[in-house]
Image (cartoon, rainbow, N blue to C red; front, side):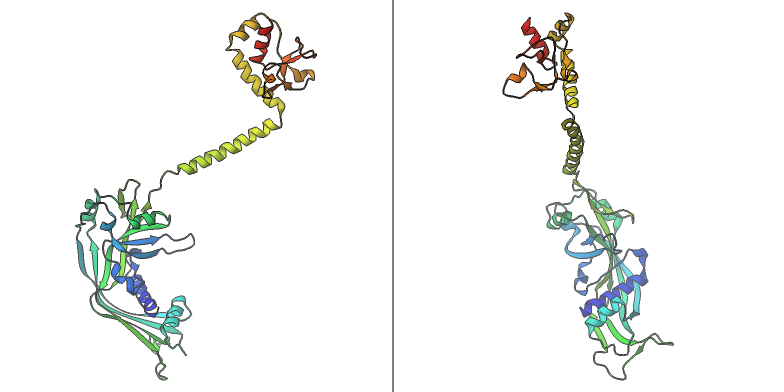
Length: 359
């Protein structure tokens, strides 16, 4: 924990001072520094709504490992010296990072208000992939969706696969040290050493060729396995989403349910609505039947709505005689049935069939 906080503080300070337009990401763990090499794969967790930073996690895989086929990637990697870096950063003890270092390092802070983290990186080199060559080479390659990293990454909407495009490394053995002290008026730090506090100074040494920062391109992976490197700053990576058929059907069912529910409420609470609905159906049917056409041409009995004559609805005298309860409000006042001076009959075809049978 002590080494982690010191190393993370030093690499964060390095990235802040070097800048590079915000593309550089500091390596936060010394134990994983060797995994951020060009063409290595990194997992980026998209930040939450209120979070300003995304989290990067190394993987044991390279870009070639998740592509179909065994062909190696031949794009070259160029290297050159970047700068000679020596830095001494002031960290306030009441700050979050200062508290982390203080609690884990064992440095005595009696009489101190600050920590000094001194990073001696020396000459650092930059190693970057030849992007134009890589882009041409990847035009015919596809992602293997059966690869465990791809398969597991697709399960989370916040996960984006990234490719390390450049890394910045040390060239010699380097040291990091932390000191507790007071902020002075004429000097950056006054190191408290007259009382010889145990653990006042702490230092770590790490080997040459340690990666201290890196930059990435996100991958945008399509459903057919084709993919793109997001070289433009505004382009975003991730997985193309499958058409959400189940969502569409669910939404459609919900809309139909609410719409039909309104209709059913009207039907349940209005007998007239139901009767008018059936009447409309039967009248359309009547216009297409020879029975109705021939019968009405004779100008005989006329079908009427019995409700208008204070006669309640009931079973149709023709089709309601079976096992099913088929009710209607229509009928004929010129016919008698079962001692009643009317007969209940559906508008069409029961009305016509009843009178056809009587002829």
